[in-house]
Amino acid sequence: MCVPRLSEVIAALDALWPPERAEKWDAVGTVCGDPDAEVRRVLFAVDPVQEIADQAVELGADLIVTHHPLYLRGTTTVAAGHFKGRVVHTLIKHDIALHVAHTNADTADPGVSDALAGALDLRVCGPLVPDASDPAGRRGLGRVCELDHPMTLREFGAHAAARLPATAQGLRVAGDPDAPVRTVAVSGGSGDSLFDAVRASGADVFLTADLRHHPVSEVVQHGPLALVDAAHWATEWPWCEQAAAQLDEISDRHGWDLRVHVSKTVTDPWSAHHTSPSIDGAPN
Ligand SMILES: [Zn+2]
Image 1 (cartoon, rainbow, N blue to C red):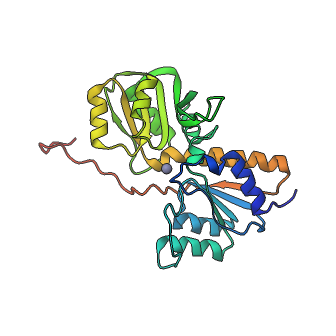
Image 2 (image 1 turned 180 degrees about the vertical axis):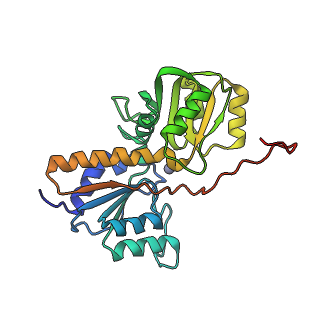
């Protein structure tokens, strides 16, 4: 068993999610960390927020790998008076590196939506928007999947809610609850730019996050496609488990003395959900 350097672990992560495959607007890669530092413990999480930095300190982690970037746009300060600077200070004070795999992990094979499909027990048929640079046709945004046993939209909503990690938001479903569901399109994170691809795929339902009134209303009026809006964090958290298993496997192959953890802290920003009474005052 040998203890890898940060540079070696990052090289392994970059082989899984090559940074050059990230979108141009994205900010992936190593945010802080000494390439020569030893890495014994790695923590995977969706968001590089203070709770996760604190958890890494408590765990004695040397590296945090998150899906979301800490800084997406240029910055001129990491002063601890700002909440992002506070994260940077916490990490550097405790010799913890931070590495981000965002849109390069979304389109990877396996990627964020494969993990989401796996969490939902769906059989992946292929990417929703294939990456033109992949001759095998396996990489790309979102996934088109099939259910082994068809169910109604009502049943599928309940199934998805039971399979995804719990959040205050839960799941919202749009469409006829009795409509049959056989083909499911999924995209971890904000997927409302993918409606045209979803329609072209012939999917019965599209499960994603961050859906808004007008686009959803138009999809439902157009029919017959149904929509499931899950919490953004919940759709991407399964990737942490998938990514941790991938790093574990690499670590075994190299004979590294590395412990890999997945944060169970819910960092979805919504913290409560209330149901209002119906408009005539009767319970809903
Ligand atoms: Zn996201």
